[in-house]
Image (cartoon, rainbow, N blue to C red; front, side):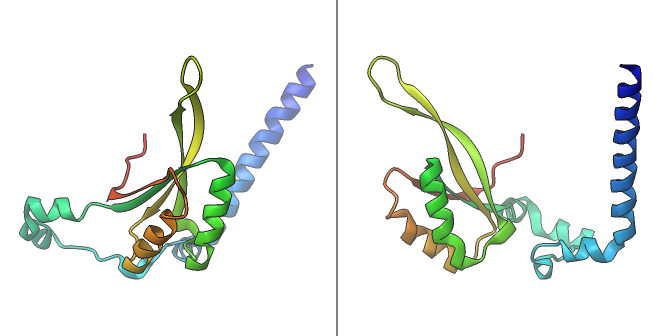
Length: 148
């Protein structure tokens, strides 16, 4: 039994160091290739930030579209409808619990909400068009949810 535990620990350590060395060999160029829309990044100097003021700083908050909730079947269909927009990694999913009326006590189902960060105007219009095809779904544009 001790031999099995020792072998598992050695295997885990080997895998850990292998993955760390593999990531270190890729370097800065690999990290740059993983960026999403790097042309939209603009660094501000401290005087520029101070000139913005608190009202403008609040307006620069991340904007997201949240669309849903969807059952698993609806989620697959909605993602297929969004495929021509080529959103890729910009589109994420979040699980939510939805209360549905039923006989006796309400039934709680786990469903999915699709979240898109920093959408372009044409994408917002397409989301609004698609939302009419999915009864019971809500479309909300606002500040991005914070990760908990």
